[in-house]
Length: 377
Image 1 (cartoon, rainbow, N blue to C red):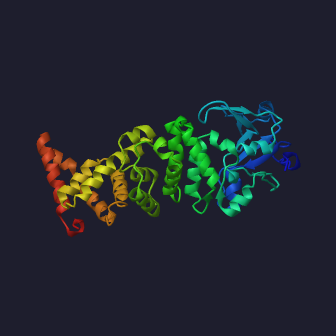
Image 2: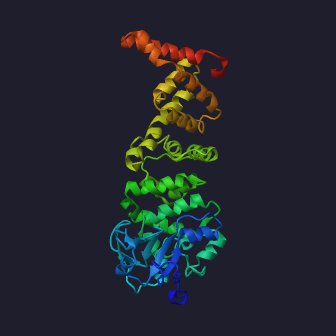
Image 3: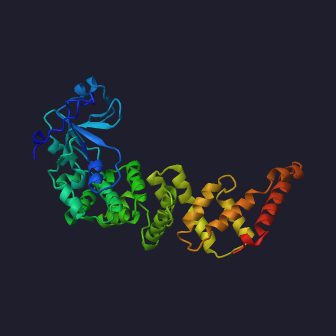
């Protein structure tokens, strides 16, 4: 099916694209076929040049290849392009975006067949690689042998497997993933890109599956050195999904048994690194089995709960996916009791004596925790 047989010229109602050969591509088409809510739309333009796009008011934003923002909708429009391997890693490509590049050639350079379907403005589908059939069969399959040239495709495959849990992975596609590992291509991945894909995968319906795919391909130890991946960690992630926990909490649960150096390698955001650093110590304290106002206050002090109460509650919610039966509401009431202590009044009574203030504050907080049956287990 040649692109010339499926012209996607938009209506003159939008002068910016009137007469252009344009198609929606990728995830928006895939998700529509799956009956999922529409997300951002990406467009590909066939037969145009950067000069043509600029003359119509499009704003260039691409670096390695021509991508433009629509002057009004701000949707992304990329010129149809091909790519050729020229070096290691996912930056090792030379792109060609000439007017002679067809839609089919642009689709063939994409990672998976389910992402290589285009839709013209009149609704017609262009599907040269059988992506519609793979959607119907629930199979994630590579578009061609060039899949093994770009290590990011392995990360994306693992993420899609975590998102689309009813899809299998074609065996030959997993074989190409192993080739990416054995040939050292995954070693060219920078931590920032690994984190970008990992963060998306952690927020899917089954983040454990992303890790399973990476492990099955041999890539896990290369992209996340020091990560301990076992059934207990997987169970914690599954619990985080059921509880609707956020990214920082899921990341902390993933890394709770791993080497400290993993955080430096992944370069996760500060909030994620904070929870990953604090959770192991909190779990160790809770696992000790001691239960008293002194222990509760020590927990709050260890995670700076008086200044950052929500972070403490987030940590306790994550801990509840490991220490089952942890009563979150009871811990929240304990924290409220400690925060209700009038530190200002105690400071005034201390008269500037720092040590007296410290001891009085601690005594008042312990008394607040010990008073009333609501705080006892």
